Image (tube, rainbow, N blue to C red; front, side, top):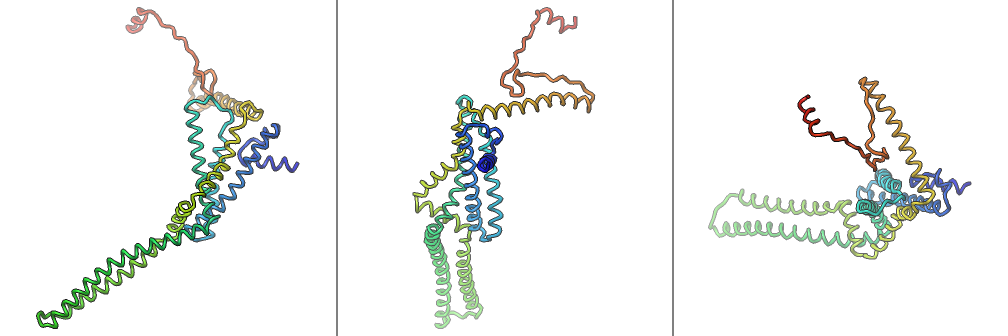
Length: 323
């Protein structure tokens, strides 16, 4: 009985009908149990991986856990929705169905990548930090070098002007007031101060968020073998969808589930047909007649054929002229 409760829990996790699965064959039950187990494993991994991402960005552990839980709930509800709405009752492989399946796979793969890459960054954090330290120091050194060369040149020009003025004053060729020297000295101090501020701003350019995403790029760029690991994990992430696709459209579970869904739709549709005229009569005292245009309503795949009786031309002319 304990194993049955575990199975029921795993089936519910992936949004499957446990009341129908309990009567199915062992293979079908195991397929959805494996899907539920994979879902739970990736759910836990998602919380830990997204917490690592948010902590790398904001450096606030408490907020990182809250954001990780919220983001994981959003992502995995979308993931569960895609799993539960995928039907094993496959129609003919026309262009529309193939395109729909392709879009669904691409969308779920993108969701998987947003989970797998942070997981790799968390597991291989030492590799990421090593590459990040090298790249960030190189970028900062280049930025500092450009800034220092600019300010050094500007300060050098001011010093040359000061030396030139001092030489001319000493030689008695010109006579100027002390304000001219004070202006140049103030300009020199201003440039030195701006240089110091620029160096501090260069340090601030590498905020935690910038460093974190730069580290992700470096990790994947310096270790291409990680993409093989990503492909393996992505296959596991998509495995519940692939397992559901492997179930035969003629299986007991598929047929029973479709039968239940069809019965629910028909019951609600018949109730709607009954209440709709009553609502108009009650609110607007209007009598309406519900008209069906399809033989398989409400699925609306087979349109009714209507035979129209066309009269003679003279009858049409008489009707126009009111005769």
